[in-house]
Image 1: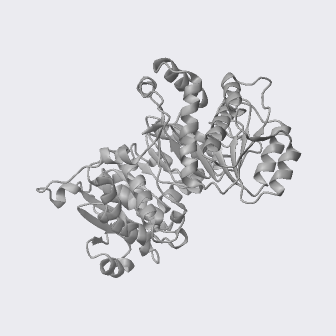
Image 2: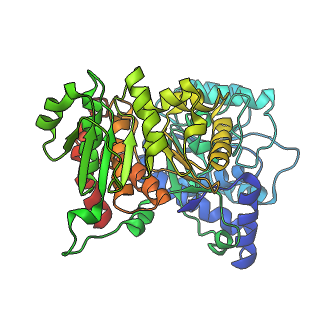
Image 3: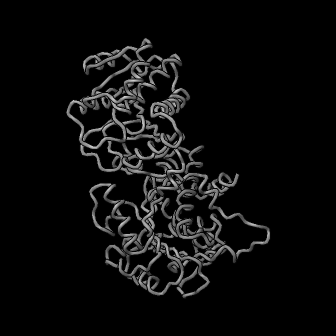
Length: 492
Protein backbone atom coordinates (compact mmCIF):
# COMPACT_ATOMS: atom_id res chain seq x y z
CA UNK A 1 0.00 0.00 0.00
CA UNK A 2 1.25 3.45 -0.87
CA UNK A 3 0.55 6.45 1.37
CA UNK A 4 -1.29 9.47 -0.01
CA UNK A 5 0.23 12.36 1.93
CA UNK A 6 -0.57 16.07 1.79
CA UNK A 7 2.02 18.59 0.60
CA UNK A 8 3.50 19.33 4.04
CA UNK A 9 3.81 15.61 4.79
CA UNK A 10 5.52 15.08 1.43
CA UNK A 11 8.11 17.73 2.27
CA UNK A 12 8.68 16.10 5.65
CA UNK A 13 9.16 12.71 3.98
CA UNK A 14 11.78 14.15 1.62
CA UNK A 15 13.61 15.78 4.53
CA UNK A 16 13.35 12.61 6.66
CA UNK A 17 14.94 10.65 3.80
CA UNK A 18 17.76 13.17 3.36
CA UNK A 19 18.59 13.03 7.07
CA UNK A 20 18.25 9.27 7.60
CA UNK A 21 19.91 8.16 4.37
CA UNK A 22 22.58 10.85 4.75
CA UNK A 23 22.22 12.14 1.21
CA UNK A 24 21.93 15.61 -0.29
CA UNK A 25 18.68 17.01 -1.67
CA UNK A 26 20.35 17.26 -5.09
CA UNK A 27 20.93 13.48 -4.95
CA UNK A 28 17.23 12.90 -4.32
CA UNK A 29 16.48 15.17 -7.26
CA UNK A 30 18.82 13.11 -9.44
CA UNK A 31 17.02 9.91 -8.44
CA UNK A 32 13.74 11.45 -9.56
CA UNK A 33 15.21 12.64 -12.85
CA UNK A 34 16.72 9.22 -13.60
CA UNK A 35 13.40 7.48 -12.95
CA UNK A 36 11.50 9.90 -15.18
CA UNK A 37 14.12 9.72 -17.95
CA UNK A 38 14.12 5.92 -17.91
CA UNK A 39 10.33 5.86 -18.22
CA UNK A 40 10.38 8.53 -20.94
CA UNK A 41 13.00 6.80 -23.09
CA UNK A 42 11.10 3.54 -22.81
CA UNK A 43 7.96 5.21 -24.14
CA UNK A 44 9.01 7.86 -26.68
CA UNK A 45 11.43 7.70 -29.59
CA UNK A 46 14.38 10.00 -30.35
CA UNK A 47 12.69 11.19 -33.53
CA UNK A 48 10.36 13.40 -31.50
CA UNK A 49 11.43 16.88 -30.41
CA UNK A 50 11.33 17.38 -26.63
CA UNK A 51 10.59 20.75 -25.04
CA UNK A 52 11.13 20.89 -21.28
CA UNK A 53 9.37 23.75 -19.46
CA UNK A 54 11.09 24.53 -16.15
CA UNK A 55 10.18 26.84 -13.31
CA UNK A 56 13.02 28.07 -11.09
CA UNK A 57 12.11 25.98 -8.04
CA UNK A 58 12.81 22.34 -7.24
CA UNK A 59 10.32 21.01 -9.79
CA UNK A 60 12.21 23.05 -12.39
CA UNK A 61 15.40 21.52 -11.02
CA UNK A 62 13.90 18.09 -11.80
CA UNK A 63 13.18 19.37 -15.31
CA UNK A 64 16.73 20.57 -15.85
CA UNK A 65 18.15 17.23 -14.71
CA UNK A 66 15.69 15.42 -16.99
CA UNK A 67 16.69 17.59 -19.97
CA UNK A 68 20.38 16.82 -19.30
CA UNK A 69 19.74 13.07 -19.10
CA UNK A 70 17.63 13.08 -22.28
CA UNK A 71 20.25 15.13 -24.14
CA UNK A 72 22.93 12.62 -23.10
CA UNK A 73 20.70 9.90 -24.58
CA UNK A 74 20.72 11.85 -27.89
CA UNK A 75 17.17 13.24 -27.72
CA UNK A 76 16.53 16.56 -29.48
CA UNK A 77 15.94 18.66 -26.35
CA UNK A 78 14.96 22.31 -25.95
CA UNK A 79 14.52 24.25 -22.72
CA UNK A 80 12.02 26.89 -21.65
CA UNK A 81 13.03 28.68 -18.44
CA UNK A 82 10.20 30.43 -16.58
CA UNK A 83 10.68 32.60 -13.51
CA UNK A 84 8.03 31.54 -10.98
CA UNK A 85 9.74 32.80 -7.82
CA UNK A 86 11.93 35.76 -6.96
CA UNK A 87 14.89 33.50 -6.20
CA UNK A 88 16.12 30.28 -7.80
CA UNK A 89 16.24 27.24 -5.55
CA UNK A 90 19.74 26.00 -4.71
CA UNK A 91 19.25 22.67 -6.48
CA UNK A 92 17.83 24.45 -9.53
CA UNK A 93 21.03 26.50 -9.83
CA UNK A 94 23.22 23.40 -9.48
CA UNK A 95 21.33 21.62 -12.27
CA UNK A 96 21.28 24.77 -14.41
CA UNK A 97 25.07 24.86 -14.24
CA UNK A 98 25.27 21.23 -15.38
CA UNK A 99 22.76 21.77 -18.17
CA UNK A 100 24.61 24.81 -19.53
CA UNK A 101 27.61 22.59 -20.22
CA UNK A 102 25.52 20.90 -22.94
CA UNK A 103 24.37 22.35 -26.24
CA UNK A 104 20.67 22.74 -25.38
CA UNK A 105 18.74 25.58 -27.01
CA UNK A 106 16.88 27.75 -24.49
CA UNK A 107 13.79 29.94 -24.86
CA UNK A 108 12.73 32.60 -22.39
CA UNK A 109 9.70 34.35 -23.92
CA UNK A 110 6.24 33.22 -24.94
CA UNK A 111 6.77 34.53 -28.48
CA UNK A 112 9.96 32.48 -28.96
CA UNK A 113 8.15 29.35 -27.80
CA UNK A 114 5.09 29.98 -29.99
CA UNK A 115 7.26 30.58 -33.04
CA UNK A 116 9.18 27.36 -32.39
CA UNK A 117 6.00 25.33 -31.83
CA UNK A 118 4.48 26.70 -35.04
CA UNK A 119 7.27 25.09 -37.09
CA UNK A 120 7.63 21.87 -35.08
CA UNK A 121 5.52 18.76 -35.63
CA UNK A 122 4.92 15.99 -33.10
CA UNK A 123 6.78 17.62 -30.23
CA UNK A 124 6.55 16.33 -26.68
CA UNK A 125 6.29 18.84 -23.86
CA UNK A 126 7.72 17.97 -20.45
CA UNK A 127 6.00 20.13 -17.85
CA UNK A 128 8.27 20.83 -14.85
CA UNK A 129 7.13 24.36 -14.03
CA UNK A 130 5.48 23.90 -10.63
CA UNK A 131 5.39 20.97 -8.21
CA UNK A 132 3.34 19.81 -5.23
CA UNK A 133 4.55 22.76 -3.14
CA UNK A 134 2.18 25.20 -4.86
CA UNK A 135 0.15 27.00 -2.18
CA UNK A 136 -1.34 30.03 -3.90
CA UNK A 137 -3.17 30.90 -7.11
CA UNK A 138 -0.93 31.19 -10.14
CA UNK A 139 -0.16 34.54 -11.74
CA UNK A 140 -1.63 35.74 -15.03
CA UNK A 141 1.82 35.33 -16.62
CA UNK A 142 1.94 31.66 -15.60
CA UNK A 143 -1.61 31.12 -16.81
CA UNK A 144 -0.49 32.39 -20.21
CA UNK A 145 2.28 29.77 -20.27
CA UNK A 146 -0.28 27.08 -19.33
CA UNK A 147 -2.56 28.27 -22.13
CA UNK A 148 0.27 28.04 -24.67
CA UNK A 149 1.08 24.49 -23.56
CA UNK A 150 -2.57 23.39 -23.59
CA UNK A 151 -3.23 24.87 -27.04
CA UNK A 152 0.02 23.65 -28.58
CA UNK A 153 -1.38 20.34 -29.77
CA UNK A 154 1.71 18.63 -28.31
CA UNK A 155 1.65 15.53 -26.16
CA UNK A 156 2.21 16.76 -22.60
CA UNK A 157 3.91 14.80 -19.82
CA UNK A 158 3.95 16.39 -16.36
CA UNK A 159 6.62 15.83 -13.74
CA UNK A 160 5.01 14.83 -10.42
CA UNK A 161 1.91 17.07 -10.79
CA UNK A 162 0.51 19.05 -13.73
CA UNK A 163 1.61 22.62 -13.09
CA UNK A 164 -1.06 24.79 -11.53
CA UNK A 165 -2.73 22.00 -9.55
CA UNK A 166 -2.69 22.04 -5.77
CA UNK A 167 -1.60 18.70 -4.35
CA UNK A 168 -4.49 18.27 -1.92
CA UNK A 169 -7.22 20.85 -2.53
CA UNK A 170 -9.33 22.24 -5.38
CA UNK A 171 -7.59 24.30 -8.02
CA UNK A 172 -9.45 27.55 -8.75
CA UNK A 173 -7.64 28.57 -11.94
CA UNK A 174 -6.19 27.17 -15.16
CA UNK A 175 -3.56 24.40 -15.02
CA UNK A 176 -1.57 22.28 -17.46
CA UNK A 177 -3.56 19.47 -19.10
CA UNK A 178 -1.30 16.42 -19.23
CA UNK A 179 -1.64 13.22 -21.26
CA UNK A 180 0.73 11.50 -18.79
CA UNK A 181 1.80 12.38 -15.27
CA UNK A 182 4.88 10.71 -13.88
CA UNK A 183 4.86 11.06 -10.11
CA UNK A 184 7.48 10.03 -7.60
CA UNK A 185 7.10 7.40 -4.86
CA UNK A 186 3.35 7.74 -4.25
CA UNK A 187 0.22 9.27 -5.78
CA UNK A 188 -0.95 12.66 -4.58
CA UNK A 189 -4.59 13.38 -3.75
CA UNK A 190 -4.99 15.63 -6.79
CA UNK A 191 -4.23 12.64 -9.02
CA UNK A 192 -7.07 10.62 -7.50
CA UNK A 193 -9.93 13.14 -7.25
CA UNK A 194 -11.94 13.45 -10.51
CA UNK A 195 -11.98 17.27 -10.61
CA UNK A 196 -8.17 17.49 -10.75
CA UNK A 197 -7.33 13.95 -11.85
CA UNK A 198 -8.90 14.64 -15.24
CA UNK A 199 -5.94 16.96 -15.96
CA UNK A 200 -3.35 14.32 -15.00
CA UNK A 201 -4.08 11.87 -17.81
CA UNK A 202 -2.51 8.46 -17.35
CA UNK A 203 -0.75 8.21 -14.00
CA UNK A 204 2.67 6.56 -13.72
CA UNK A 205 4.35 6.03 -10.33
CA UNK A 206 8.09 5.52 -9.91
CA UNK A 207 9.97 4.81 -6.69
CA UNK A 208 12.83 7.15 -5.73
CA UNK A 209 13.72 5.24 -2.56
CA UNK A 210 12.18 7.51 0.07
CA UNK A 211 12.70 6.14 3.58
CA UNK A 212 10.01 3.58 4.42
CA UNK A 213 10.54 4.21 8.15
CA UNK A 214 8.69 7.50 7.72
CA UNK A 215 5.46 5.64 6.87
CA UNK A 216 5.57 3.54 10.04
CA UNK A 217 6.23 6.65 12.13
CA UNK A 218 3.54 8.71 10.39
CA UNK A 219 0.80 6.26 9.29
CA UNK A 220 -1.30 7.75 6.49
CA UNK A 221 -5.09 8.08 6.63
CA UNK A 222 -5.28 7.92 2.83
CA UNK A 223 -3.89 4.82 1.13
CA UNK A 224 -3.44 3.63 -2.47
CA UNK A 225 -3.78 -0.14 -2.92
CA UNK A 226 -1.55 -2.25 -5.14
CA UNK A 227 -1.58 -5.86 -6.34
CA UNK A 228 0.82 -6.96 -3.60
CA UNK A 229 -1.77 -5.91 -1.01
CA UNK A 230 -4.41 -8.09 -2.66
CA UNK A 231 -2.03 -11.04 -2.76
CA UNK A 232 -1.53 -10.69 1.01
CA UNK A 233 -5.25 -10.51 1.74
CA UNK A 234 -6.24 -13.42 -0.48
CA UNK A 235 -7.34 -16.54 1.42
CA UNK A 236 -6.09 -19.64 -0.38
CA UNK A 237 -8.26 -22.76 -0.37
CA UNK A 238 -7.22 -26.18 0.84
CA UNK A 239 -8.25 -29.66 -0.37
CA UNK A 240 -10.69 -30.26 2.52
CA UNK A 241 -12.76 -27.09 2.04
CA UNK A 242 -16.49 -27.44 1.31
CA UNK A 243 -19.28 -25.14 0.12
CA UNK A 244 -20.54 -24.24 3.59
CA UNK A 245 -17.15 -22.77 4.46
CA UNK A 246 -17.58 -20.14 1.77
CA UNK A 247 -20.87 -18.72 2.92
CA UNK A 248 -24.44 -18.33 1.75
CA UNK A 249 -25.00 -15.12 -0.20
CA UNK A 250 -28.52 -13.67 -0.47
CA UNK A 251 -29.19 -11.32 -3.39
CA UNK A 252 -32.31 -9.13 -3.20
CA UNK A 253 -33.54 -7.27 -6.28
CA UNK A 254 -34.77 -7.72 -9.82
CA UNK A 255 -38.12 -5.95 -10.25
CA UNK A 256 -40.27 -6.57 -13.35
CA UNK A 257 -38.10 -6.01 -16.41
CA UNK A 258 -34.91 -5.75 -14.32
CA UNK A 259 -34.06 -9.39 -13.77
CA UNK A 260 -30.76 -8.91 -15.58
CA UNK A 261 -29.29 -6.78 -12.80
CA UNK A 262 -29.84 -9.35 -10.06
CA UNK A 263 -28.66 -12.18 -12.32
CA UNK A 264 -25.42 -10.31 -13.07
CA UNK A 265 -24.86 -9.66 -9.36
CA UNK A 266 -25.58 -13.26 -8.36
CA UNK A 267 -23.42 -14.70 -11.13
CA UNK A 268 -20.56 -12.43 -10.10
CA UNK A 269 -21.00 -13.55 -6.49
CA UNK A 270 -20.73 -17.20 -7.44
CA UNK A 271 -17.78 -16.59 -9.78
CA UNK A 272 -16.01 -14.81 -6.92
CA UNK A 273 -16.29 -17.89 -4.74
CA UNK A 274 -19.44 -17.82 -2.61
CA UNK A 275 -20.45 -21.38 -1.65
CA UNK A 276 -24.19 -20.82 -2.04
CA UNK A 277 -26.30 -18.06 -3.54
CA UNK A 278 -30.03 -17.41 -3.15
CA UNK A 279 -31.99 -14.79 -5.10
CA UNK A 280 -35.04 -13.12 -3.59
CA UNK A 281 -36.92 -11.57 -6.49
CA UNK A 282 -40.32 -11.06 -8.11
CA UNK A 283 -42.27 -14.17 -9.12
CA UNK A 284 -42.25 -12.93 -12.73
CA UNK A 285 -38.47 -13.41 -12.73
CA UNK A 286 -38.47 -17.02 -11.50
CA UNK A 287 -38.15 -18.65 -14.89
CA UNK A 288 -35.47 -16.39 -16.35
CA UNK A 289 -33.41 -16.60 -13.14
CA UNK A 290 -33.55 -20.37 -13.00
CA UNK A 291 -32.78 -20.71 -16.71
CA UNK A 292 -29.97 -18.13 -16.65
CA UNK A 293 -28.37 -19.21 -13.40
CA UNK A 294 -29.25 -22.78 -12.37
CA UNK A 295 -26.53 -22.65 -9.69
CA UNK A 296 -28.59 -20.14 -7.69
CA UNK A 297 -31.60 -20.80 -5.43
CA UNK A 298 -34.73 -18.81 -6.29
CA UNK A 299 -36.87 -17.38 -3.43
CA UNK A 300 -40.28 -15.79 -3.87
CA UNK A 301 -40.60 -14.82 -0.19
CA UNK A 302 -37.97 -13.62 2.26
CA UNK A 303 -37.45 -15.67 5.37
CA UNK A 304 -35.02 -14.49 8.02
CA UNK A 305 -32.30 -17.09 8.26
CA UNK A 306 -29.08 -16.88 10.31
CA UNK A 307 -27.37 -19.03 7.71
CA UNK A 308 -27.14 -16.08 5.32
CA UNK A 309 -23.56 -14.88 5.49
CA UNK A 310 -24.25 -11.64 3.62
CA UNK A 311 -27.22 -9.87 2.04
CA UNK A 312 -26.87 -7.66 -1.05
CA UNK A 313 -29.87 -5.41 -1.65
CA UNK A 314 -30.49 -3.21 -4.64
CA UNK A 315 -29.55 -4.49 -8.12
CA UNK A 316 -32.68 -4.01 -10.25
CA UNK A 317 -34.78 -3.59 -7.09
CA UNK A 318 -36.85 -0.72 -8.44
CA UNK A 319 -38.46 1.96 -6.32
CA UNK A 320 -42.06 0.71 -6.17
CA UNK A 321 -44.06 0.47 -2.95
CA UNK A 322 -43.30 -3.27 -2.85
CA UNK A 323 -39.57 -2.59 -3.23
CA UNK A 324 -39.68 -0.04 -0.41
CA UNK A 325 -41.49 -2.51 1.84
CA UNK A 326 -38.90 -5.21 1.11
CA UNK A 327 -36.01 -2.88 1.83
CA UNK A 328 -37.64 -1.62 5.04
CA UNK A 329 -38.15 -5.18 6.28
CA UNK A 330 -34.58 -6.19 5.51
CA UNK A 331 -33.07 -3.11 7.13
CA UNK A 332 -34.98 -3.86 10.32
CA UNK A 333 -34.61 -7.64 10.51
CA UNK A 334 -31.42 -8.73 8.77
CA UNK A 335 -28.67 -9.83 11.13
CA UNK A 336 -26.11 -10.53 8.41
CA UNK A 337 -23.66 -8.06 6.87
CA UNK A 338 -25.57 -5.90 4.38
CA UNK A 339 -24.47 -4.32 1.09
CA UNK A 340 -26.73 -1.54 -0.19
CA UNK A 341 -26.51 -0.72 -3.87
CA UNK A 342 -28.40 0.92 -6.74
CA UNK A 343 -32.16 1.33 -6.07
CA UNK A 344 -31.69 0.54 -2.39
CA UNK A 345 -29.64 3.73 -2.18
CA UNK A 346 -32.20 5.66 -4.21
CA UNK A 347 -35.01 4.60 -1.87
CA UNK A 348 -32.99 5.46 1.23
CA UNK A 349 -32.24 8.90 -0.21
CA UNK A 350 -35.83 9.61 -1.26
CA UNK A 351 -37.42 8.32 1.97
CA UNK A 352 -34.65 9.83 4.14
CA UNK A 353 -33.95 6.48 5.79
CA UNK A 354 -30.28 7.03 6.62
CA UNK A 355 -31.17 6.65 10.30
CA UNK A 356 -32.46 3.12 9.55
CA UNK A 357 -29.08 1.89 8.31
CA UNK A 358 -27.36 -0.22 10.94
CA UNK A 359 -23.67 0.17 11.73
CA UNK A 360 -21.19 -1.67 9.52
CA UNK A 361 -23.47 -1.64 6.46
CA UNK A 362 -21.65 -1.09 3.17
CA UNK A 363 -22.98 1.49 0.70
CA UNK A 364 -21.77 1.55 -2.92
CA UNK A 365 -22.83 4.91 -4.42
CA UNK A 366 -21.60 6.58 -7.55
CA UNK A 367 -21.28 10.37 -7.38
CA UNK A 368 -24.94 11.10 -8.16
CA UNK A 369 -26.22 8.59 -5.60
CA UNK A 370 -23.81 9.93 -2.99
CA UNK A 371 -25.04 13.50 -3.44
CA UNK A 372 -28.67 12.36 -3.20
CA UNK A 373 -27.89 10.53 0.02
CA UNK A 374 -25.74 13.08 1.81
CA UNK A 375 -26.27 16.41 0.06
CA UNK A 376 -24.87 18.14 -3.01
CA UNK A 377 -21.10 18.68 -3.09
CA UNK A 378 -19.38 21.31 -5.22
CA UNK A 379 -16.23 19.26 -5.94
CA UNK A 380 -14.57 15.90 -5.37
CA UNK A 381 -12.42 17.08 -2.48
CA UNK A 382 -15.51 18.24 -0.58
CA UNK A 383 -17.29 14.98 -1.44
CA UNK A 384 -14.44 12.89 -0.05
CA UNK A 385 -14.39 14.93 3.16
CA UNK A 386 -18.14 14.47 3.53
CA UNK A 387 -17.81 10.72 2.92
CA UNK A 388 -15.16 10.49 5.67
CA UNK A 389 -17.40 12.46 8.03
CA UNK A 390 -20.57 10.45 7.32
CA UNK A 391 -18.77 7.11 7.45
CA UNK A 392 -17.41 7.88 10.93
CA UNK A 393 -20.66 9.45 12.13
CA UNK A 394 -22.91 6.56 11.01
CA UNK A 395 -20.37 3.75 11.45
CA UNK A 396 -20.79 2.64 7.85
CA UNK A 397 -18.51 1.82 4.91
CA UNK A 398 -18.88 3.94 1.78
CA UNK A 399 -17.51 2.77 -1.55
CA UNK A 400 -17.49 5.99 -3.59
CA UNK A 401 -17.21 4.72 -7.14
CA UNK A 402 -15.06 6.41 -9.77
CA UNK A 403 -11.76 6.15 -11.65
CA UNK A 404 -9.89 5.65 -8.37
CA UNK A 405 -12.77 4.29 -6.31
CA UNK A 406 -12.46 5.45 -2.69
CA UNK A 407 -13.29 2.97 0.07
CA UNK A 408 -14.12 5.07 3.12
CA UNK A 409 -14.10 3.26 6.48
CA UNK A 410 -15.57 4.25 9.87
CA UNK A 411 -12.05 4.61 11.34
CA UNK A 412 -11.53 7.48 8.82
CA UNK A 413 -9.11 5.50 6.68
CA UNK A 414 -9.60 5.74 2.92
CA UNK A 415 -8.32 3.18 0.41
CA UNK A 416 -8.05 4.28 -3.24
CA UNK A 417 -8.23 1.59 -5.89
CA UNK A 418 -5.63 1.29 -8.64
CA UNK A 419 -7.40 -0.92 -11.22
CA UNK A 420 -10.16 -0.38 -13.77
CA UNK A 421 -10.72 1.56 -16.98
CA UNK A 422 -13.44 3.61 -18.75
CA UNK A 423 -14.97 0.41 -20.13
CA UNK A 424 -16.62 0.06 -16.72
CA UNK A 425 -18.80 3.09 -17.51
CA UNK A 426 -21.70 0.93 -18.63
CA UNK A 427 -24.90 -0.42 -17.10
CA UNK A 428 -24.40 -3.65 -15.16
CA UNK A 429 -20.86 -2.97 -13.99
CA UNK A 430 -22.06 -1.83 -10.57
CA UNK A 431 -24.25 -4.92 -10.21
CA UNK A 432 -21.21 -7.11 -10.81
CA UNK A 433 -19.27 -5.19 -8.15
CA UNK A 434 -22.03 -5.60 -5.55
CA UNK A 435 -22.15 -9.35 -6.19
CA UNK A 436 -18.38 -9.65 -5.83
CA UNK A 437 -18.44 -7.60 -2.64
CA UNK A 438 -21.18 -9.76 -1.12
CA UNK A 439 -19.23 -12.87 -2.06
CA UNK A 440 -16.04 -11.80 -0.29
CA UNK A 441 -18.07 -10.91 2.80
CA UNK A 442 -19.83 -14.29 2.68
CA UNK A 443 -16.45 -16.03 2.53
CA UNK A 444 -15.33 -14.46 5.80
CA UNK A 445 -13.21 -11.52 4.73
CA UNK A 446 -13.46 -8.53 7.06
CA UNK A 447 -15.51 -5.62 5.76
CA UNK A 448 -12.41 -3.59 4.96
CA UNK A 449 -10.75 -6.54 3.23
CA UNK A 450 -13.92 -7.40 1.30
CA UNK A 451 -14.29 -3.83 0.04
CA UNK A 452 -10.65 -3.60 -1.04
CA UNK A 453 -10.65 -7.07 -2.63
CA UNK A 454 -13.93 -6.62 -4.51
CA UNK A 455 -13.12 -3.20 -5.93
CA UNK A 456 -9.59 -4.22 -6.95
CA UNK A 457 -10.62 -7.55 -8.52
CA UNK A 458 -13.57 -5.93 -10.31
CA UNK A 459 -11.23 -3.40 -11.93
CA UNK A 460 -8.61 -6.04 -12.65
CA UNK A 461 -11.16 -8.26 -14.42
CA UNK A 462 -12.11 -5.26 -16.58
CA UNK A 463 -8.44 -4.52 -17.32
CA UNK A 464 -7.85 -8.12 -18.38
CA UNK A 465 -10.98 -8.05 -20.55
CA UNK A 466 -9.79 -4.94 -22.40
CA UNK A 467 -6.59 -6.70 -23.39
CA UNK A 468 -8.68 -8.28 -26.16
CA UNK A 469 -11.87 -6.16 -26.18
CA UNK A 470 -12.13 -2.43 -26.87
CA UNK A 471 -13.14 -0.37 -23.83
CA UNK A 472 -16.18 0.82 -25.75
CA UNK A 473 -17.28 -2.80 -26.23
CA UNK A 474 -16.79 -3.99 -22.67
CA UNK A 475 -19.99 -5.39 -21.17
CA UNK A 476 -20.74 -6.50 -17.61
CA UNK A 477 -20.79 -10.15 -18.68
CA UNK A 478 -17.18 -9.83 -19.85
CA UNK A 479 -16.16 -8.60 -16.40
CA UNK A 480 -17.75 -11.73 -14.92
CA UNK A 481 -16.02 -13.95 -17.47
CA UNK A 482 -12.67 -12.51 -16.44
CA UNK A 483 -13.06 -12.80 -12.66
CA UNK A 484 -11.36 -16.20 -12.92
CA UNK A 485 -8.46 -14.65 -14.85
CA UNK A 486 -8.16 -11.97 -12.18
CA UNK A 487 -7.81 -14.67 -9.51
CA UNK A 488 -5.14 -16.38 -11.58
CA UNK A 489 -3.25 -13.09 -11.85
CA UNK A 490 -3.15 -12.41 -8.10
CA UNK A 491 -2.26 -16.01 -7.22
CA UNK A 492 0.61 -16.43 -9.70
